[in-house]
Each structure stands twice: as structure tokens, then as C-alpha cells.
Image 1 (cartoon, rainbow, N blue to C red):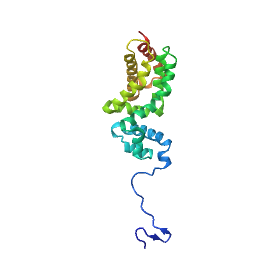
Image 2 (cartoon, rainbow, N blue to C red):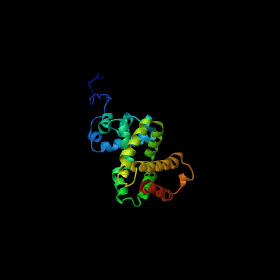
Image 3 (cartoon, rainbow, N blue to C red):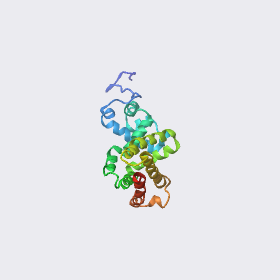
Image 4 (spheres, rainbow, N blue to C red):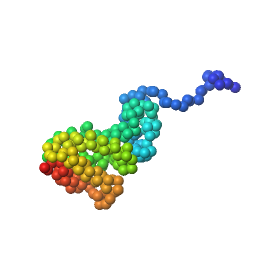
Amino acid sequence: MTTDGGSGPHGPAERPKRRGRPARTAEATGPGARERILEAARTEFAERGYDKTSIRGIAKRAAVDAALVHHYFGTKDEVFAAAIEVSFEPALVIPAVLAGGTDGLGERLARYFIGVWENPATRAPLLAIMRSALTHEAAAKVLRGFVLRRLLERVAETLDVPDPTFRAELAASHMIGIAMLRYVIKAEPLASAEPEKIVAMVAPTLQRYLTQA
């Protein structure tokens, strides 16, 4: 018979595992940890919505310490903003959309936006973002800040027309309305229309918003 901390017939008795922070292994703190946290955040926001998603839940799904989530992203709002950016990838796509100048800008913008929503990998977190923004001011604030700062301002900078920011916001409102009806409410016949048909019909309106004086 052994006592606490004693030895059994095959060596020291196995101590019960301690609860608490996970070990700071290379897997939990290495270069891939940030990407795992972002992926976990996208999944958590998609499945649970903004209100029920927590830093602790994101950390658990990513198999990291919650302190590491705070280290990389700070608050839940900042994680939410980063999850939006991963879905839209503005740093990669927006320069390509704007590179051709104003000719065809409406079509390129429409194709980019619809393409993001048609991609199953980005659609689920975007749905969560849209739904959360409708019911939670904190989520709406993050979404507004991202759309205005990272997307619309970049577009507006290229426009040589009066009220460029207002025009960019009109274009965004048009596309967000389509996203709401097609992907959230699923209103027919818009919900089942071919993406190319939507792009073809929307592009001239976006072009007019963005370029006509």
C-alpha cells in the first residue's frame, strides 16, 4: 500500500494532473498559434455569435492559453475585427481591385464582394458578423470601423469626384443590402440567382456611384 507521494511497486506513484494554464509549449506559443487563434475565433463567432463568444472559448478551441489571445489581439472586439479582416483580406485584394483605375471599378468591386460571399470558407464567419452587427452595438461598431477604415477609405482615395467617401459608402450599402437579402434572409429569386448575373446587373450601379460626377 502506498502513501501520497510514495512509490508503488513499479516506481513513484503518478500524481494527478494539475488544472490551470496549459504548458507554454512551442505548439501553444509558436508562429502557428496566431493563425490557430484566428481560425478558432472565426469558428466561434460563426457558431455562437458575437454575444456568446468569449476569449476563453476561443483559447480553448485554439488549444492555447487565454493570455496568448490577449497578447496577440487584446480585447474581444479586436479579435472580432481581425476575424473580419481574415475573411475579406483587404491588404491582398483591394490593391488589385483598384489597380485598373476607375474603368471597370464597379465590376471588379462587385466581383470581389460576391466572390467573398460565395466562398464557403469565408461565408460562415461573414454570416456571423452580419447577424451579430444587427443585434450588438459593439459588433456593429467594429464592422463599421473596419468597413470605413480598411475598405471604403481605400476606394475613396482613388476617386476624382465630389464626395468620394459618401459615394463609397453608397456602393458599400448596396453590396451589404444584397448580402443581407441573398445570404441572410435568402429572399428569392435573389438567393438562387447565378453570381455572374448579380455582378452584371450590379456593376453599372456601383460604377455610377463611384465615378460619375
